[in-house]
Structure formats: structure tokens, C-alpha cells
Amino acid sequence: MPSWNIHLEAGNRLADKIKLKGKPRKAFLLGCLLPDINNGYINKVKVKKQHEETHYAFDDKSSLNFYKENKSQITARDPIFLGYLFHLYTDGFFNYDFYRTIKHHPLGDGLTHPEKREIKHHDFWIYDTNFQHHLKINHQEALELAKLANQIPATDITAEDIEDVERILKDTDINSAIRGQKYLFYTKPRLDHLLDNMINSFVNDYLENSNA
Image (tube, rainbow, N blue to C red):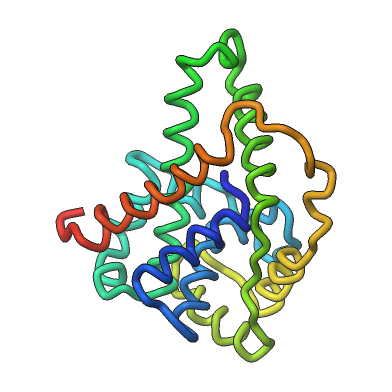
């Protein structure tokens, strides 16, 4: 849903808020990307899995499914599990906002779901160009992070997969085709506002509310 740069922007803001530093911060930020890595949409991951599996997309909302299965790790604030949960929450938050609001917007009249999804992706790729993040990891750290990541049942990655993700994040030309284009539905101030609201909502739902 949101791009990796947006996931990492949100992750860095939350990491600042909860004072994550050093190795725990890197583990958390990798967790913010993990649900997408085994999908292999833009990276050449060795083991590919379906979106439904990596995003816990069954029955209730994805983040709640993941939380129910990994409550002890989330309660203990294990950084890689927390980052994974935050990715799912971010996807759900922005999906809900988009599809709820476009129903009442003239732009959405008569459009199919795939056509609406194209608008959503277009606007998020434009928003992505405001950020440039990467994990700042070396090979030894990638080895350690892969072991941590593979504690999550839906994850199966190697250090080389993580290094491939890092190369993609450093590719400043990846969004060159969309630079300068205009938003179709959102505006940058609206997305900035939603990003901050989403972070505050996550803190309330999963870090402050013990009955999440």
C-alpha cells in the first residue's frame, strides 16, 4: 500500500517517539518492511509468498490478526515484531481512509475497484518522493537481522534479501517517472496529517491500550 519510503518515514517517526536507538531501531525499521519482502514485488527475494500470508489478510483486519498471534512479543515491545505490526497497521489505516473517502468524492463516481486502486497508488508514489530512507546496515548486521526476522512465521528471508532491499532503497531513480506529477485525490498536507494521526492511533491502540 504505502511505499517503503513512506513505511520508513512512519517508522522513523514512531521510533523517535518511543525512543528506539541502535540495533533495536534497525530491527524495528526492517520489521516495517517485512510484510512486503517475501511478496517479491520489486525485490528478487529467494522465497516468494502470497500477500494474504505475509499480511495476515484473513477474517479480521491484518494488524489485529498478527497481534493476536504474537501478543507476547508485542507486549514486550520486541522491535522486529513491533515493526511488522506497524506495517500492517499503516496499510490498514491508509486503505480505510482512501476507500472510505473516495466513495463520497466525485472522482470516484463510476470507477471500478482496480481503477480506484490505481489512483491510490499514484498518489502514494508521489508522496514517496518527499522521502529518501534506507536501513544503513552492513553484511554482519544483515545476517543478524535475518535471524531475527525469521522468528516471524510468515517471514523467510536471507541476509542477501535484506541487502537487495537496501539497494532498492538507495536507488534514487526508482521514482523518476512520477516526479513532478500532481496528486489526483490527496494533497501533501492531507497525507502529512494522516501520517501523524496514524502514528498516534497506533500508539494508543497497541502501546498504551493493554486491551488492544
